[in-house]
Amino acid sequence: MLIDTAITSTRSGRNADDLALYPSKVRTIVERGLLVILFTVLVALATFANRDALNQDAVSYLGLARHYVDGHFMVAVSGTWSPLFIWLLAALLSFGGDPVLIGRLAMAISAIVFVGGAASVFGRIENRSVKLAAMVASVLLAAEAAGEAITPDLLSAGLYCYACTAMVASWRRNSVWPPFAAGCLFGISYLAKAVFFPVSILVVTLSFAAAAYTRTMSGKTAATQCAICLSALLVVSAPWVMVLSSKYGGFTFTTISRVNSAVIAPPSVRQDYPTFSSFFVPEQGRRSQWEDESVVPSLRPWSPFGSPRSFIYSLETTLQNIPNVLADVRAYDWTGLSLIGLALFLGRSVLHRRSMLTSSLASFAIPTFCLLLPYLPFMTPFPLDERRYFYCILPFVFASSLEAARIIGTGLCGRKGARATLALMLMLLVIAMASLLPKQAFRSPVTAEAGELQLGRALAPSLEHLKLIGPIAAAGHYAREKARYLAFALDAPYNGSEDAATVKRLLQSCANLILAETDSAPDRMMASRHDIFSDVSQATPEVEALTRHAYIRIYWTTRRNEARCSPPPLHWAWHLWQRRTGEFSAR
Image 1 (tube, rainbow, N blue to C red):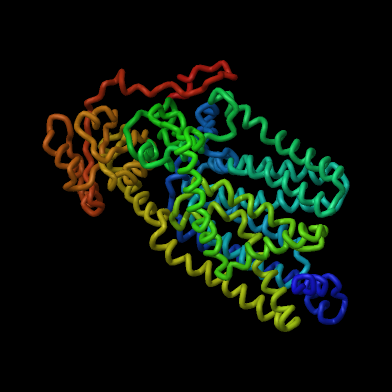
Image 2: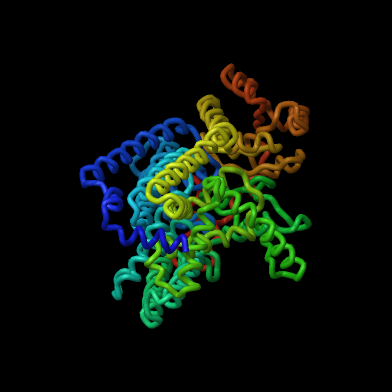
């Protein structure tokens, strides 16, 4: 009753109180201008503050983008990493410049797309105050995310919002083009992040079914538009799916699940990411097998359907992850009104079979809840930075929480109550996002890795001057990331790491440069074998100072079995192009 009263009051608003919520065009222009200035300043500050921050995934994104720039298409294709963000990086890299700054520029562009997608969602809200408050929250989130990990999450979130808005807009018009446009946008969202391929199919199917059930449109019209939307999605997705299927030898739209399934498997068969737990020579043309771990022979994918015990374990993991996922959403909405509000908006339409167009957010409940489902079987209690997986639903969260607060305030105290509850909710959203900033600044892997990247870039000139350039590996967990970023700075192959590496395994790594923590077991072992390993940590005063401060040692060895250390051929099951993989070997 409270929801019905508040919605009716809003939709019938032609009196003086309602007109007060709709400012003049001049005020609208001023508000938008201030939002643009706020967004520009905050994104610039976030970019500058994190100009040296490069996360692990970004190394692979930049590496694959470099393959495109160099014309090595077959090496650039990877089922682990979605292509759209890589194409954006490749376009920017083609102009030259620092790869890290280019990654930050790509995140700024992604932030623009995200804010635009969020604005398209808020266009469905009739109350001006709710729109403005939601836009402020989205601008703050976009600026914060632009300074975090260089990943496609922000870009894909904006595209997903555009797609959902276009799908809902198609319900108002009995035409071919609106659902076709929505399907194309869903397909582009898949190119930005692979999880949107199954999610989009589920969202489109359920949304049009709900639209037909609630009499938002006739069943025949809903079926027709659903078919058009899904067809457009498949048309846009098909070329990349065909490329991946030819590479891996069967229908494939992503291979990230192969790697993740091994990581979240039961303890008896669980594996760490191969790049972090073993030595191996990357494929021809690759700087690291992190670019495509799904083809590593030692990787053993795990399936929850392999046995009853596996299925029970997967079901238990899914149930355990429900509060974890909800907690990550509530990190931005402390009141929890967003998901409750979306469920109530949708439930009101479904139970009373009322058009979902009569409620601002009923149509966005399905896209929100469907996106939570894929992460339940795979996610464990994850670190703070993994909340980026849910950027795509945060515009819906902001809009729902603010709209719910307005409805509660209107029902209890009228227009003045609505303004008070809106202001309170916006303040809570801002405080929630601000509360994450200190944790991001001091605990985030991105910030920690910024120091390791600076170390690698500081060591690189001295090692190049000494002509100590070759494949790099790490002995022990402590030196793992430092070795990886040193390889990035030197543009050298990274041959992985092992915690309990023996002399035999270190030689089998086929690496010339090996990093180890000072006074660790691998360090003492290599220091005792002068006939095989040479300590280059004291080669120059600069190298000595850097390695001493970082508490690592660098060893050089030339003991390599060249036949065994030759890069394996690039994996490609069905050759659509008559080219030899040798053309794509490392330069």
